[in-house]
Length: 146
Image (cartoon, rainbow, N blue to C red; front, side, top):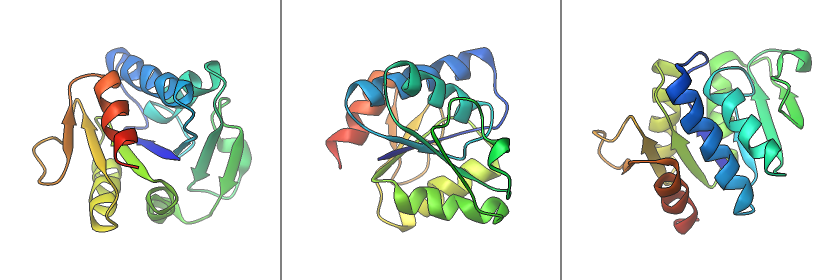
């Protein structure tokens, strides 16, 4: 199980990075876990789903209908941003794309919990984050450490 984290709204370029990352994870047999909403989360889930993978969304609210349409298992928590800890705890590795403070919390929690954290197009300057130049490298780094 690999978490893909990033902004809830993102540019088309970041969306494509996330979509390709999700697709590659599924092609390698990994299940995708994310926050279940839009932006990076939806793009990664779309890529994984298109490649036949299982997608899990840990939602901040209490309504499973808030999940993006590419989520197979929507788990509403009612925990708000605290759900980030559940995402990272459930994952064996974290791939973090550009985002804001929510993504930063997932990066920090991943490092604190001893998870391999890969930064794709972001976060590489943080000590302990493994920088990746493209989705292929990000997936390879994440899966080689689980």
